[in-house]
Length: 335
Length: 297
Image (cartoon, rainbow over all chains, first blue to last red; front, side, top):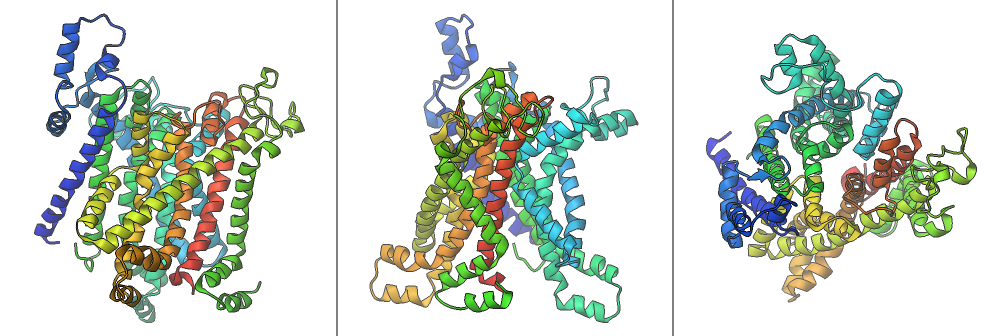
């Protein structure tokens, strides 16, 4: 891919990012309620102290200047203090982020590992009972409300069968030195298989809840693109050359059929961000999504503002990454 | 109807009739459409169908199990919730919220999307640049997060949920209409209308719009399922319609407190969401297959 084109595409992101920042700023700036009053709550405070706080927070500035200040601060990661935690917002977010990243990655992996083989099989066995079942299954997958599916899993596996834990990220008795802050990896680095097992048992149900709808979408995409590839001349030619069916599927068909799957997976990773809020709330998962939902109820606006901006910027970059990936995988498409 | 008979009858009449015939020839699609219609009727006639007042509490019936389980009774078929309210009646009334919000959001968003998309695709220039940039920016937000942030700002409630969802939903039909309009403006019938001195408004609304409506209808139907799940998700998080009004999402949320002793409180409202969304998804897939020439083979 042309490096100049890449820079050009990257530059096109700037107005989008700026627009996203404007919307996030005004969304919160127009929120009813005085941030200073929310922050001080019922603590006794003098008028001078209140004015000083208002000045520190930049609330005495006209809106445009406030936005410029907000933008400057956002670039340096300074989003002010979290009203509730009495600590810088960015610290609280960074602390919660690994849990969300770990859950998202495992869900993505789960979705890819189930959807690709099932999609390929459904295409190869087109119009058989397996194909029909896979299609019905994927329709169910996209129609399932995530929060309900999560509760059903909890009721079955945690409450009634007692096989898996109800909530949280790891049991109280387990600890591991933080290296990557991703518990599965850290426990492996420390050689603590018991901790790994415990962390995994906490992850299974949330990852299943988050990954299943994505798997349903990816399976449909894989099936469709595999069917399209299998009808191409070069596959017929490979068959005519006498290459065995499995070889054709793996070496010729799958490589090309996976291009849309990988692109859609990259796009769908962005939508995992929204799903995280629901799943983290259902499973008491200590990630960013749950933090945002909790923050809304205690009107911790600086945190909500920073988190929404973080989500949006990540989403924009994920979509950009999906675009680039599609171009790299499919040289016929020009950026 | 046999496949051959369906194909022959599908070849008669106007394109709309032909496509509808094709849609009706799929038993599954028709069945799903009927199912959606039943849900709509249930919502409209809720006061006549619901066996009880959905908000009437009776602590003696707190967590009463469904009729087929010991301790249940047929007058309260799906059992009662933590405040002794009849779950079936609340599901019937909850359909009103889901369907009303889903329908209103889609109608308003599609209306806005059609106007913005037509203007963007036909007028081009600064109109197109402005609308396309706004669309790009709004697409920069994950949907649920955008809606949650907006509701955090304007507060929960029926009207605010509709607003929060419309703010982003119009982008979807807008993109479809813009793309179709860009293609249509170069076609002969539009050029002919221009040569005859037709105004931009006339050409957009009378010439282009009727010809690009099919894909818009198909996309809107698919999106309705999505909007219903989003509304339920917001209600589940406590950001939707406020209690005591019954909504399926908040009913599922209420049941979380009773997972150990009363599985039915969460299960049945969730099942209602699944069935409605599934029926809409299957019906909209049938619509897409019937209306999109790519799928006619």
